[in-house]
Length: 208
Image 1 (cartoon, rainbow, N blue to C red):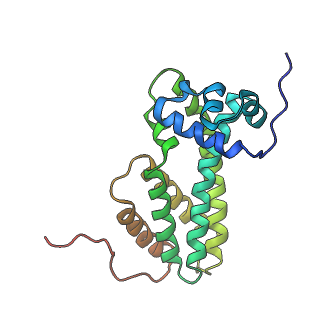
Image 2: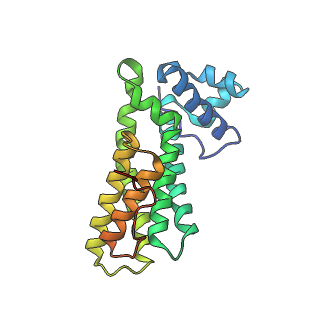
Image 3: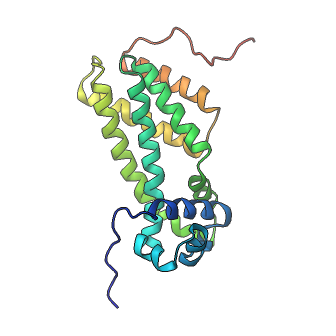
């Protein structure tokens, strides 16, 4: 039996189906996701679900892509809000990403999967995580260069690689609130990028 052709990039029900799949995965696990169940949740025929996504493998990739796009959009919006202040842009971007991760149904479902069919999603996340690193670093490089830091291209690349990997580690295992973590990383970024920053952390501990 020949493989079905890939579905179009976007039909009128595609986004609703993907969001329904994310919610169902978070509630019941990836093994509970079926085309028939998604059709019921969205209120369309099962054939419509197949026409939009094609297969469960394509659906899984679309789900992960949907969430990664939200993260990258949040980063871009943060820099747009602070065109003249790199430190505030970094703070805003890191905080936005961590707040999204804190309430991310798909990410929590994948992180909590420990056995059985749910593990099918983990290789997909691993593959897309590598793509996310490339996309995030490319976006940040273009943004940071625009602020004119007194660093070579290699130095900027090293600083951004450190920042992105640190943020991703906090996504998977938070050690503080998104605001406090963002404040600390913005302070570090300011020192590494040679950009003036606030004299003290806004979320610094008091007393003692």
